[in-house]
Image (tube, rainbow, N blue to C red; front, top):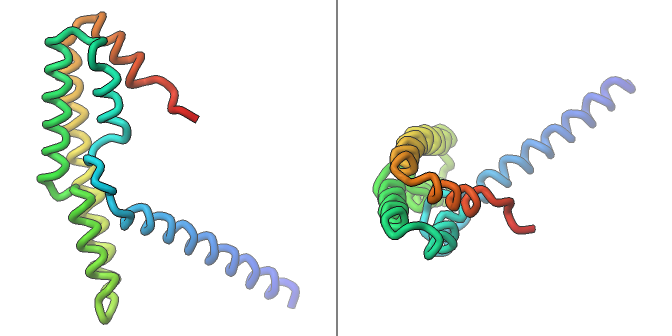
Length: 148
């Protein structure tokens, strides 16, 4: 009897943790974008903080890259705004289609991975064309610890 009570408790705790994690994930995915541009967190802040610290040529390259990244995310299947709308439709439907829900999220994650890899390579190409001094400033700004 004691083993059964322990097993029931463990299962309930496990269920609670899984529901919490699933709710956190869905809440993050479904949260509106608040009109901020998509892309890596803080990308716009980094560009703003680089302004005046990089050579004019490097700043032009960084701004162009930022626009390219933004356009790539907004125009592709990894657009979080599109996912938000599609998931909302699935969640508000008369009958919840779990397979379609999982399929949408799987497709989004796969597209995001592909997109992120292309973006990483583009960043490397642009940074390779910067001077050492500009790369140093970029490192100071982009790799600083986040504010507390």
